[in-house]
Amino acid sequence: MTPLFLRTISLRFRLTLALLLAFFLVLLDHRLSVMQPTRMVLNSIVSPVQYLATMPEEIYLRLSENVRSRFQMRQELSQLRNDMLDMQGEMQRYQFLVRENERLRNLLASDAREDSLRMVAEVIAVDSDSYSHQVVVNKGTAHGVFIGQPVLDDQGVVGQVSSVGLTTARILLISDQSHAIPTRSERSGIRVVVQGVGDTSMLEVMHVPHSTELEVGDLLLSSGLGGVFPEGYPVAVVKSIDLDISATFAKVTARPIANLDRIRMLLLVWQASSEQQPIFNPVQAVRERFSKTSSELEESVEHDD
Image (cartoon, rainbow, N blue to C red; front, top):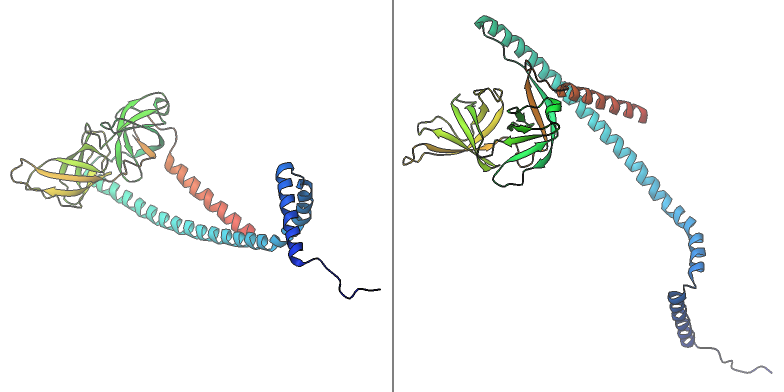
């Protein structure tokens, strides 16, 4: 005989039982790691599905990266070609000026200026003394470095070699209080002496009369006097001029062209006729590297095509 009503387990009781069982399994897995084999099996089953799910995104990202890299390479190649054309134009202009200079010097029976050779050096240490502005580079007597040798960077004059070892040399910066350099104004040709004041962002122009023709913004170039620094290299820009009548001289300050507080790579300069010569010509090395980089980019783009 079938009863009229069947008693079934309520949903609330089922939910409570499931929660208790889940809590028991979590606690058991936390204490004894009994679910670790099951978890490994489930991960092994799910991993191919996850891989297939992420495959379209990975393919899209790779294609996008290849297209972006190819586009960047084309831009770099185009920029290198433009730079090469500019350099070739500047070289033609330079060669014209050299020939014209030679003709003028022949007319004036004047001796030609000696070319300068350069070698790249890297700063490996900075003087910790706040009253001394000096750095150490990784070139020494083994490379032909000598005391008093002028040092430049890509902007202008940095200083000169104050002491030298076999593989290192110490550079005295133009901002040091003990350093002074003769300069001339590019605009007016006035000769003045620029001295360091212990501040990498400021120099002092010494003994400037109140009737000076210097102006704020004038570029000061090395004059070549003293026989240490070659003529014509940028040194500083006039920053301020104070014509105080009560003072003996005008107070003139200048800003160094070179970033003396951030120098990393420097150029050690030789005269072409000097007995001490650098090991290599960095200008030629830069040209060869530029040509090699351009060729590599062209071959890479042609290969992608």
